[in-house]
Image 1 (tube, rainbow over the protein chains, first blue to last red):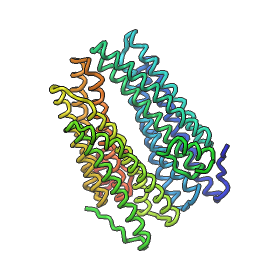
Image 2 (cartoon, chains in turn purple, orange):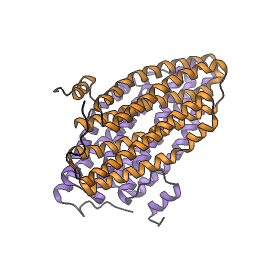
Image 3 (tube, rainbow over the protein chains, first blue to last red):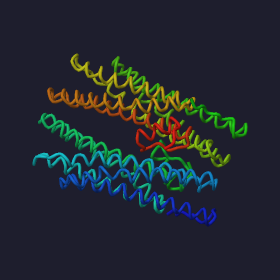
Image 4 (cartoon, each protein chain N blue to C red):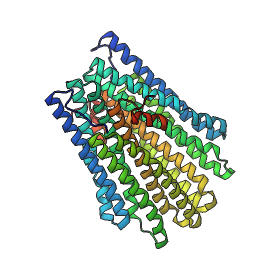
Length: 239
Length: 239
């Protein structure tokens, strides 16, 4: 397993600054994870108050995004990092952009909790919940991989997105069939569909963050490459 | 009007490098603009070949994204830019991420061209086309603003997103009403709805790029601020 060795190239002060900004990213990640978890719980329990809480917690995440971004620019200007230090700062800048948008998606998901569903519509919510739990675990795992800059965990999250896509497609078919059978339910079921889409997008964004971790650890940009090429990069084999 | 004065702080060689990377961003923007334009044209004409072309042109955009990103990291490591030069590089890194995703959305939009629509469904496509043209003009304008780092144009694009949101909401209502009246059409109309959503997202991404331009010119992060605070920043008034 590849480990980060942050003390290797850099001065103590610089190390502290990088560590502080990394910790702030993890705080931001924790907030976003809580938003997603609460939005799923709000749907499951039909808890409107909890949904409202998700809808109003956005400003903290936004504030952290702007603050971390500023710190990164400051670090680049003052410390002039190169090699893996620079890759870390770039990976952080990109990660927080995805985290902020995961928070936005969580807000969209929470809105579903405000609807009331009939007994036979509850089964649709169960499928949504299943997708939600899978995506939530991807988010947790990628934040954990980020905390330890763990290549293997990042790669595992990347692989898990395929299952999220499959679950999303199955759910979409289920929802469309339901709408065709009960057209009065369309506006309500559409909200479930938007939530499903938001969850699928969160999965994509977790995949993005996994790619930034691989970029940091391996120094290679693995966006848009074939699964084989990515595997070679992660396993450390030659291209 | 604020103008960029790139020659002020930097060496000739550095200036050339920045200029080259800026030009590449504009090439990437041109490709993405063409993708969106073609996807709208493909829907309008029911041109499946053109839609296929959009669906397979993605790799050029992806390649440029990775290449520009590499150049930016290289410039930071080698030239150690500060102040407005650093802001430019950061603005570029963020802009290309949004451009790449606009390309992805254009692909989703192009898929609608593969469906065949009845005469009374054509009116829905007209509304989609209207939204599409508005968003395409936002994209053109923001690329133009980026080329000249023009604060006023960037701010205008930012303001235009409100109209895109309004058009999107009206179209969504129109599509849902149609589905409720003709439930067999749901799978087909859902594709139109996803396209509408993609267009709305492209509008958001143009707004993001406008914010990066304002960040570069004014040195102030205007994400998540109130409209009044943004206006003060753009107009150069004190907060």
